Length: 199
Image 1 (cartoon, helix red, strand yellow):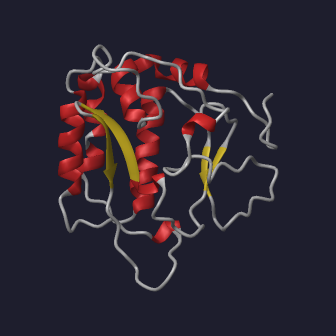
Image 2: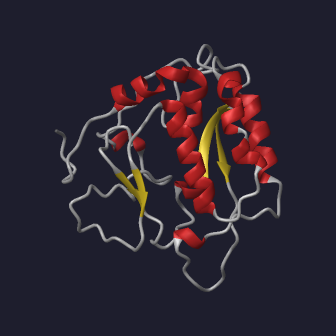
Image 3: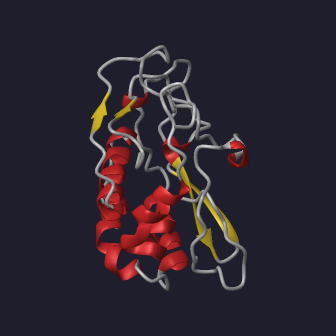
């Protein structure tokens, strides 16, 4: 996002359960901690991303926020950004896309990324002039093969005793680096053109 002149968020593709649309990873005391936002299961049919609903059958939002507090309350910028982030977990969301849009808005504001964002009005195939990154970041893909993003190391909460853990939620960067987050992101990027080649 930090390297783009504009970005389009796809809402009309079929929702995939094995993706980062409803999950993220933070750095807890015992290492990387995956957190998942549960969604309402629609049996027997494919659902567009924009129609996926958040499930509150379990108090996941309370569990997530307590996990974030435990992981980052001693980080340098936790108190500074806490009040910006916490409403994501105190408000009750109907649509996952609305939760994600608000999370994106808040984290862009916290990091200083000012890329113009639009949301798709219909499904777009990959045959466009725009660089298609929909399947680039995926839980089942090996981040080590990504030549477009090579994470610059920064000091993490548990970094004194443990090695640097890359490719976590943006929350890890925000709480640890604060206003320097954008510099870390830019130092980690390889700028690419719409054909996926380095510039």
